[in-house]
Image (cartoon, rainbow, N blue to C red; front, side):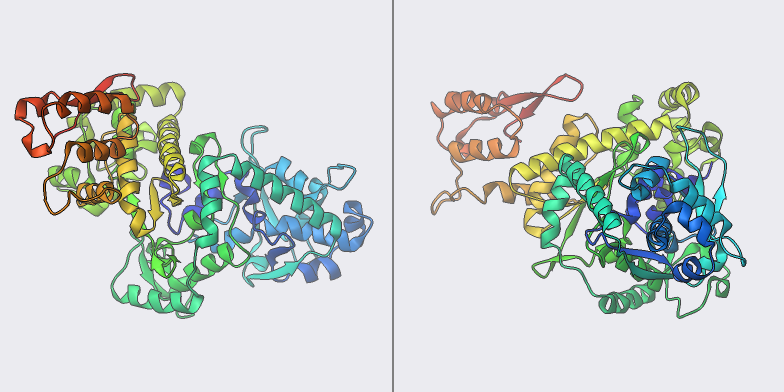
Amino acid sequence: MNLKNEYLSLTGDTEDLQILHHDENFAELALIFPNVNSIWIPRKSETALRKYVSKTLLKEIDPNVDVAVEKCLLVLSNFASTYHTEDKEDRWKRLNSKILHEQTKGKDNTYIYNKIIDLLKTGTATGAIIEVDEHYVKGVVSRKYRISDSYFKPGLTEYLIKDTGIIQTRNKIYYRLLNEALDNPICNNLVKFYPRIELPTSGELLAIGKLLVKDGYTTKKQKTLTMRNKHDNSYWADADNRSFVENNIKMFEYLTNRGFMIPAAGSEKSGGRVVDSFTLMPAWIRNEITIDGKKLVECDYKALHPNLAMLLYKGKANYLTHEKIAEQTGIDEKEVKREHLSFFNKNWYSMIKSPLFNYYSKHEPDMLSRIYHDKKANGYKITSKKMFKLEVKIMTDVIKYLNSVGIYVLYVYDALLCEEKDKPVVMETMNRIILEYGVKTCVKDTSAKIDIECAIVDDFANAGDSDRITLAEHFNRCKRKYRYVEKEQFDSQYEMLSEFFKYVDEVDENSKNNCYVEFQNYDGDFERIPLFE
């Protein structure tokens, strides 16, 4: 089990691209940029194909050698993303045969991708262009491929496709994927958000990166941001624990220079999590995105996955946080947070070895028992599949509501980036909807309640020169705050109180205590909301 390649390790930071290489459904990562005739290929590959590869093998792919060469380059472009992974020893990428066929087929729908793979494996007299790991399970796990060392080391170069047939095929794929994106609420929201995004320049990012290095910045997986300064990895004894500014900027350029990727929902094992140019770029670079010259703000749930596990496996704790566990165990909070990225996705033996296991076995033994039996019956990845599915449901409902009131956001798994002016509504919506699902956590912001209350009163007139708030104003605010509750409930409560009171400060405590509305939560149970707190 390689936890670096597990979906629960997706954090919206530098290693996500590498994780996705192990899902064959994301072979199209190299395809889904708007400029469809532009691809990135290994620097020496075009020359090798045109000058040193057997013309007989090329003509088996297409009678027109130029077209055959371009189809080979098209397959090689699938590996461009592997040049931007943190771990250069893990350059393997799974390629789905259906996707390879769709990329390379001609008008007669002939299957030629196998001939392309064979040619690239054969290569030239000096060696293969690609290497193939033949371990696969038909219909379950696809083959893995990687660029050979001699073609990987020189890096990438841009190539513009010339054959109109290939360009037409790529346009069809592009618009198919765009249609799929528009049918997905999260992706649709992103497509509508993209036009407003302003990106930093590479020069600006280099200057910012240097400052972050001086400040000791670390990634979400606790890698130290470092200036490479033209050194290779052997210069550092702990290179695996570093993330390099120059590499991060190259990744950013790859993800944005040809337009933004069409956002795509993942497979069942990822619960439908959406990936795009912004989930895959380094977090410190994403933080520099602006709209109208102003940076976005992040709204992120506290310890979402532990709290999802509490609901799914009937744990006892409410509002569990990394800080609470750190305090009770003596484990460093950063280590608790890092370990939570993969704890629930591990097999049982690896969970036992985790520093978090003692905490959960002491405080949540029944929950752990349920997880154990679920993993035993359905495979160890079942826990993360359930968690991702619930996470995506929650975020989908949050985004659908925000879009309904004219707010669009940038999505990063369990976090949303929004404009500062929209933050109160985004936070209120995230907090409200996650409680509707029965998950006891909230957004990371202690000022949330104050901000929400300020947002609620914005659209209502002040009570003249007096500080007194009328009942009418109070109930209007409640309707805005609890939009998911039927309005008739507020109206009936208001009618009863308004017969005796005009202002909130006139209402006696007994009347306040008996004034509430109800809503049905995710489990089908009814919960009360007091209207005077």
